[in-house]
View 1: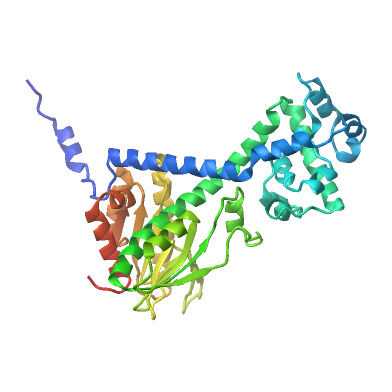
View 2: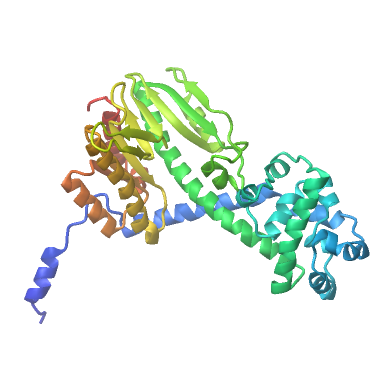
Length: 415
């Protein structure tokens, strides 16, 4: 005989909020995680391939090396005696060039700067910070001057000597150290790529639909092209070189434009969209920072930079959206936190500058139950206009059409 639920159990059931329609199901999360893992794996393979590690190691193997000469010049090259002893005592002995460089190595083979920098556990960003930038040698194959090569060698060798002394030396330890440093950089590349890829997928949906409606005027974009291991630093630093980003380009769209061909080529070259302009003058802007100034009181300046902005001819923010492309359920709370911080800044800035409150949306690859419930609370309070589950959009025609209809309305074309 089954027991009737007690009073406390009934209260618990009654207080459990109903999940919003945009909450991710368990199977949707599994599929999103699977796609994310495959995408990261493809990224990793492409990055490692672009680094040409095998070619670098073959170059090092072919470098003529006189061990006695290196040993005698160890002070000049800033190599500790104890480190060389460890290489000599290894079984079999390890050739010095796998760990230590000379100025001639870098002048004759500037591509090795990247190798020794990573064995020394240094990033390109930190090298710029100490006024020893390596970008020209790593990206363009430009040979450093004799003076610069000496400075680089002494700096790299000094650090590597300490690492060898602490960690010991094995035939593969130099690779273990270098790859661990590359792993840190790969994390940044992966995070950037997840965001870029999600935005590109959103644009593909929108541009395809809007082109069919005949309302796209132009598409502004850049192509990132091949992967660069330190590109996440380049993208975020004002002082970083922009060699891995090509010049901004514009496609003026006509009814005859093969939009699918354009999108395919853009995706293949890791497109980063900047602006889409429609025939009514509305613009969809990406990663654009706006500055709003208060007209009275302290006249404080508010800087806001959502992932996407809909702008009309007379209003600089009709709608704004935050895109969270990550598919890790454990990171869903953090994604919601960062999204709400950005959206709250917009709401506060609009209020303090006497502007009309823009419509706001969240676009996320997954929305775990607790995040979906909180997002629905924001909608109920009037802080959010809408929430879109990118996995549902990818798998459900009705969800995709709802998103497309709403976005078209946000761009000044009523339903």
